[in-house]
Length: 577
Image 1: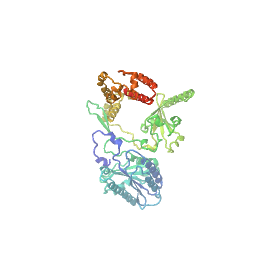
Image 2: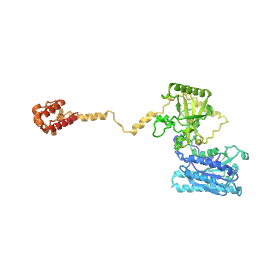
Image 3: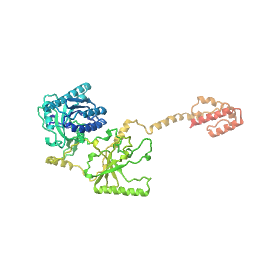
Image 4: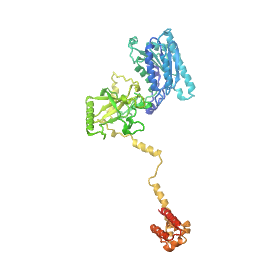
């Protein structure tokens, strides 16, 4: 066990906050990569390491979401110790990082070095110089903030020399150095099949013994990997995973096997298995959107959905169902059924239905899955990106298939899951089995028995965020306000006699009730009054308009006022309504 594990305080007994792990990476260390470009091994490891760096940096620079690598620096040791890249931010800085990798490729792969002691001294200087550069960078950029002061640094040394010898050189050279900001020192030995027997040790077995007088609070590990691009990508992708370790991520609560209210708590850490395609905005065809059929279909801008060809997936392999790990699948599943498109004739639809039924039966009877790939002809239609996805097709007892995206090599994160060869402790087995017997067992999972309280939450949140609108109070109040003036003056208006001769003057001073009868035109008031007589208490509007029109036809001296009176009459009728 390393010194860091022995001196680390015990985790808190409080329940872990899940959001803490999933929402941010607060304790990600800065990264320093020191490459030993020493002959004669460098000529073999140079193309492998540089290709792995190119692949990894292109992915790390394009990731959205929380910052996984805050800072990166690169050193090379050949005939001298050289800093190819000072501390820079990784996200959005691909051009500069790519030029640094190209400069690393130009280092000579042939030559000689003055001796092992000279190489050990250059390696020691590179480690110390990187720590000094890190302290200066933090001092000039932190401005006294507490968040920057909590950032530590992790140094990775890539070598082709025997790993144990390099670790001993570092232990001796860094014994009296100031290593407060150094969180971990990892030595990665790249080996080939020819020289594997020189240092017989397991390929993934780190060194666990640490000198007590060496460096306090620092882990020194040795990792041996094969000289291949994929294995070096795996080493570098470990930088993208959460590196906190100061607190457990999850508390799993089980019912107590005894009559006590205290549950049994199993503390766990969580680890990402793959990079979500949603964090890569430059890859629209990576199969990230499977939330709906519309997201899955390929639709071009400015054209109708009916004119788009259906997505074509080509079967490339059959997989045994028990050989597929669920951690390699992501996204929401889509259910496939035989089509009922009306554009197909009955014979074609029946033939297609029989083929679909036969496919479901064959896969289920043989316990197989289908591995699908987007057809190559469609890979050039999405803006020339050339990015395509893979899917897994699972049969079901019903006449349907389940389609889910499957991860590819580029998005896969390292995950060491060793199989335990030892039996668990008897006391622990007895406790856990007692906990499990307290739970109800169901033969078939029914999601209708689960409720997440989502409806109530959405209603409460929506009512709080939006203003309240009364349902009947406001229209009723408006109706009372409009009808209130009509209640009082009605009896007075019915008892007050009307004077037809002064009707035009009374309109300006009378109430609204008195204005409900349309006034006669002022120019023909005498003729109208002599022909019509006193107006009744309740006059009919159509009768008034008819008589006015007939009187206007007999007297042709003022046709215009007659039309004006008709217009005013219409306006008054609108007021009455």
